[in-house]
Length: 424
Ligand code: UD1
Image (spheres, rainbow, N blue to C red):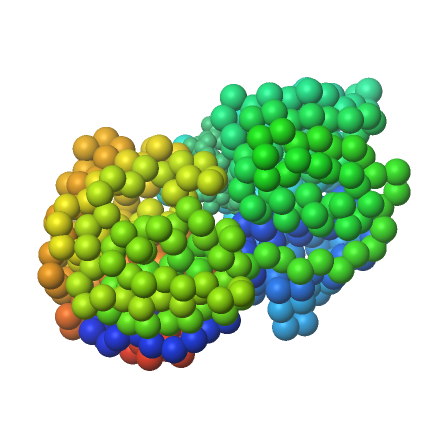
């Protein structure tokens, strides 16, 4: 069987500038939202990724058209005909549960398989389901399939989430936007991607206020209209490229990085000894010869330190002077990159959800395996700094969220290539 590897020859200082991709985590719910409106949505800066591709396939399956021209995706949803998503399509993308709210909103019913366990944790959907129930959805589970309907129609409701889940907040908005009456979501997620979803719907005629705070009010649209919308920049990829520059002692400028969304991570780079400057929408980073340890980092919902950046931040810590500690509070299984980093010479010990990282002066190239998207990107980052050659396998995880990753890194001077090889 053929498989792809990223091969990195480490030790090259990254230098230069690059244009940041649009946000995966914003594009996915907005692609689902485009199915709700019944109109044409022109989505600009929509990243070209395995996950956005999967979302477009789901849209086509339910009867929408979804076409890409460069970084623009056009969705027409005037005549969708199916409210079920087959298992195979659901399995292609972990975030496909976001289509549950969209299908219910559009058809008043939905049938799809519950997403299975996942590489970074169990990812249950109980919060999604109880929020949707409050909006009038009846949920039955039959042989692993969720059969949902709204026998009396969707109605606005007061929803209080026990935890500010990003996906549950998005599914609540997707469903509430066609419900009868107002919905108030309390303890909502405050991530910038939620603001982007609200802005998209508001552009289509809905009235959603409070996005970005913990209380969101959704007043449904009387009628949706066609819209053109630009997806926000990918704040996690911005941090990922900055980390790649940091571990190589490099100096980069990330264009269109929207520094306002990077407030939770920029102090981390400064603490590590990097000089960070923002100029309009650009972020510039100059790294020192050796990074400093960063003390205690605790992942939290936005505006806390993002769990999606924990793995790459850990690579910085692994190469720094001193000891750093990471407490992962969002997902229960998000240290799967640690054994791989250890193969490269990192000194990291894990006790439950706490990782203690003793910085070493140098990592060494090794054959490692990406176990999830962000962990995979972190292994590439480690490879860029390591002495010798690093081979990262299971590249498919990385392709879910990093657009033209190796091309962008090569633009900054990295020696990285993708090769195809035979598995034994
Ligand atoms: C989204 C992001 C992901 C990011 C995460 C946290 C997308 C496509 N993905 O994932 O990149 O890492 O936010 O910032 O936007 N939970 C429950 N029950 C539920 C829902 C969630 O217990 O019904 C738990 C999860 O298991 C997890 C925590 O809540 O431990 C956070 O999950 P959530 O905020 O929902 O993350 P996602 O929307 O899956």
